[in-house]
Length: 323
Length: 298
Image (cartoon, rainbow over all chains, first blue to last red; front, side):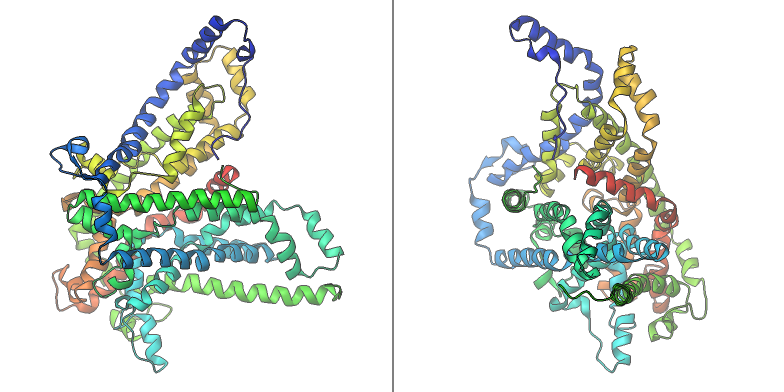
């Protein structure tokens, strides 16, 4: 995805019979743009320190890290941290929660913005269209803390409006946020509420780019509007769907854990504890750095492998891919 | 397939379906928002009993009055404003400094740099090593931990670079170079004046990000004098409710006012979200534009 634009070829690179002057000119190309490199100095240093620095620090996953010795000075322990994690009693639970939340999100939350975009695209009145777009985009700008705060207010067993509603229907109050069996549904449902509008923007843009002649042709062939949605609109945005799917899978194991962390409490732990929240608790709160880094590395590697696999698969099957 | 139903009736039934689903979505999205606003202005007893279900009942500003008396909230507000302005300024500076040179197709080595940058979107060191780097730099418990570790969002950098490449004609830059314009001058005098729309989008993306962020503050800040608004919110809305509702009241030193505690939460949500929600109608178009630019190269 980085560089599909045709590279600007300078004539000098084709002069092969004068190797010395070629090198000189290459040097000149660089010195002429010295100020561009100076501009890059700050951002590239930032990337080296704050992105590649932590990657370098990943070595402590294989070490017994002591803050006093630093990344380099700590003692190697091989795969000990990983073995400890894989054989721990919570490994299965963490992995299952992470995978299931991701999988449910992919199955339920991923298609909804596509559906919403198709729906908005079919609305005839411009005013109604604007309304539903503006309203559905809005929750995207609310902070996670506020979203979870709203959940805890609405779902409160005493006086939360959801439970008031249940009571009027003659049902018992449910302490939703304390029940492990409700956790995933609430997490994914509120994600959909917050993000479906925002995520539909890209699809709406893609829909606007479909050639109107295709719709005309389908109409002449007698396709109903629903058939046109299924056979013209949907295939028209298919490449975009694939790209977004790849990007989502690339973050498969991260599952929006900041929100999970906020929703977590001792009662719903059984289904809310995911790998990332465990890393936070064990690493940041308890200071078990090496072990938590190993778990984080395990998480990142799975993400990366999944990304590569799905990208390759998409390139083969759908002829669309990130690179 | 081959049954040619009359076009009009087909379209009509379809339209009705579209409008019904749209209306349902509209209600589902709007209702919780309206409820929060109304609840913050209502007598908490009416909210708890379900009497208030859409519009404020027994209008009152008590909750807001309590919030304005709370120093922690004011302090958090001030911190968030500082982090947002300073952080966004640093974001824009660094993102522009990276995006412009990398948008130049005549820059030797740009592909390698671009690869190094894009790679970090898909693989990174993770929470703990990042924390250790920031800690090693002595930033923990300082304002810098709120600004420097997030100085560049790679996605935004790519969006900005795409804009420079696609919206500013390369011929213009070539002409300026022939006239002897230096690269620095080019950025300041030609590129930036032509890039106001994308800079506006970037300011919005970054500013909203800073305003809503809580996680970095949670791991890097110990001193509650430095807490941003979102962390204060977390304490009042979530941490306190876990030990039972009474703590929410005691935050404000009034254990007897349990109910007020609840409506304070609603009011707090409004107070914390108001800057973003007020500017939302005006800047919504820019946000959408930003997403679109980003999706060109996606």
